[in-house]
Length: 497
Ligand code: ZN
Image (cartoon, rainbow, N blue to C red):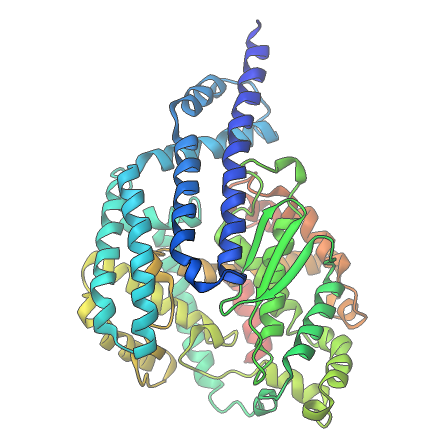
């Protein structure tokens, strides 16, 4: 057998194993979707067992020695570095090494801690009682420290966490970008304090079934179809792809606002990225978006850059007005568009506008680093949270439910994830500027209900590549530059200053 034939056989063998691992993960995705969308609540405990078994199986299958042996055989393979094969080997090798570093005992402990802490967080938030959640947060931080210790060669502790969501991104880089944003955002919020836009007109009532109809129309115009996509209601919206040809979104519809329409467009952005990944990458680690920030850049593109643009509403407002004739009949298009773009410093990250949102993230990013470094204690966290919300946004935090307890992330051990939300905003405008340079006036196209040229451009330049390129390389290929806050700041100033 020649070396080439041997390598081809090894690659086929590796793909077979990766396919099995991917199938187990897809099964998990269906169970997770079911647990959040349709399972009776009493099934939670039994379901946790099923999920744990699947997770263990896919983990063990992936970290097994034979995967390492196959990767070793393939290391010397003479492939074009820009080929899909080379990318598959690179991405799998990186993932395999990172996954192997963490003892399965610690993986199990972290999974159990998440289950317990999220239940405690739920109760603590309902009662606005931080003290009852504090021991769980302490425990999560202790487990994170042990996780970080699995990567002793990485000098900055926070870099270890970032690497899980944003390959190659360093804490120093994020700090540089965020420090710049922080200064400008605080100033912009200050300047918009007298924002006269009337957002009361967005308080409804907007009957739920009609909002769902509005969401369906927008999804259809963006290019989803019922043979591949579905949308359901959950308290916390998300998007999921359990397999090729199966894109599931959720939204949360409340009669008193139009948030569900924007969260539908947001989740569409996540969904379309996954949908448009080259189908030849299916059942391999290349078959998903390149990173958390790139993913978020696309949800933000469809939610904000498209969904809050004047052109989009020139097309859609007449339809919305007809659907909600009682509430919006007397509201003209210009006032409506101003209303949905009002800047209002508030307590809740999830409700924040485009300007204040970044400051919510910067606060969390800073606190995560300080908690891990021990310079802020869990005990002091609520007070520090309140003081900084006052400094950054000028708002008074009345209780911990609307303060430090509002997000679930820390309860499920997600540290290092928050910054990717704001990096996503930054990247969204970098990519957008390129799209506009290539396609010309998008607003005019949107005003005719034409979204396919943007979608096709994004498919060609971003989506179809899946995880083939490291996020930094992909961004460079698309925009010609590295992470750069300038386009985002230009956009915010042009729109809000
Ligand atoms: Zn998102």
